[in-house]
Image (cartoon, rainbow, N blue to C red):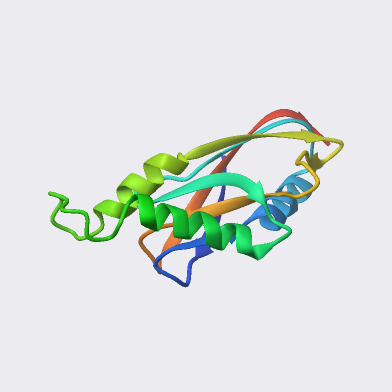
Length: 133
C-alpha cells in the first residue's frame, strides 16, 4: 500500500489530485492494472468529474451546500454533521484503470479529494492490482 498526504486549505473544496496519483503510478513503475484509492476519513471523500473548467467543482460544492446545509438540525454534537453526510454522498473510494503507465480518464475528467471539514491534513491510501514495470 502507498499513501499520499494532502493538506486542504478550505472548509469545503474539491482538490484535484490526478497529477499526484499519476506521479505515484510512474514512480512505482505500475503499468497495466487497477489502482484502488481510499480516503480513510469520515468527512472527506473522492470523486471523478470535470477538471477542465473550475466552475464545475464550484457548482458541485454549491449544490451539496444546498442539499445538506451546515445548520441542518443535526444531532451529532461536533458541528460537522453536514460534512459526514456529504462525504457519504461522494464515497470513500475509487477504482481507476491504468494502461501503459497512465491513469485512464475521459478527456475532461480528473480525480478530486472532496474536503468537507477542513482545513485539514488528509491521507489517501493507494493499492495496486496489476503488472509492475
